[in-house]
Image (cartoon, rainbow, N blue to C red):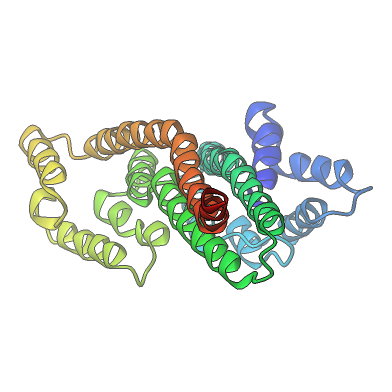
Length: 295
């Protein structure tokens, strides 16, 4: 819902160059018949603006759509920089990217779901055909199949999902270009990475170190590739550009991983399901075949 709301608002406010109030009013009337959360949220934000409240507070307190801390943080910074249009365009691209990745994951999951469903039906057919009344063993085989397929799908989902570090670096680059100092921009990554995560805490610490004048290489404790990039940025005086380059590098690696996973997922599930069906047939039909040989 956040993606749809942001997309509609960005289309009106950014691309069609309307005022924020006009954009919200159009969204209110456009979705009024359906009385959905987009219409109600637009109405709530419009009322808050009319009352003179900050737009960031309006997003933060909106009862109909849950705008997360990262979203409201970027909106609040745009109020200070006076460039809400660029912020909304950035947020729109961010959520559209997440949506596309989820769609890819859904597309990948359809074929395995079909294969596993076919295997389940085949196992029940084999069980009935063999005349074996004990379904317990069949269920054990099925649970094993679902467990293996679920594990494979979970790993693939993790691989093709959005890289948090990519999102953090891209956000830092956007904030620096919007006029936020490097230390504050780095510390803001906690809204993407999570305050309780190890990576989130490390970015907060890096922001504090940068504020006291430390170099990027000494402030961060990441992998070798990142430290080399930070060293180069410190040496050349291009600290504001390194985050975008790192984000692009992470994205290129992620795209290669996703492409590889999408190529492997179908044959992998076919192999797993084939082994399952082979084991099932051998379990229920081998005794029958032995009896035939005996006669």
